[in-house]
Length: 222
Image (tube, rainbow, N blue to C red; front, side):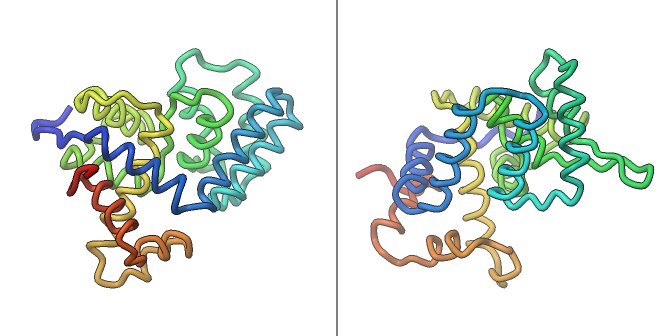
């Protein structure tokens, strides 16, 4: 996929991301619990259920989907005759036609599909892309944005030999991509990070600094 050797991810980096999620980011953890509860308590994919799930994804993830009604109609249409391949599901949900032009809402589509259709689908966002680019040197965009991203995520897990769920790997990619961007930025305010994230990254408590160093693979568990 890329001639440059892959920078692998160590199991302890995955463990560190999960620990940060559980112990230092209560808002993020609460969002995950809420989405899990919704997926389990409303298994239906009726139009009403899809409306509820899409609205919750848009609000809790701040995807700001300005054409949410059209997106809901699109999901209903796709699920009436869904493609068999999971990645193709995201590709089918993502495009929305606005004024005769298609716009691809990859982040929203991947999040909806991950939580409510197939949890093996990785979540697509700018920070996960940044993390994948760190491990591969760059991402080669050859098919669709989501398919290329998903292939790199699965290749990273395989090349690293880590045994983890897609959700655990997602946590690592999102958090490490964001932290590397924050650490390298001259003007950190331009990154648009949430208050919870800024508080975490600015926290000088030894336990937090150690957890973030573990996230980047800079220290072991000792």
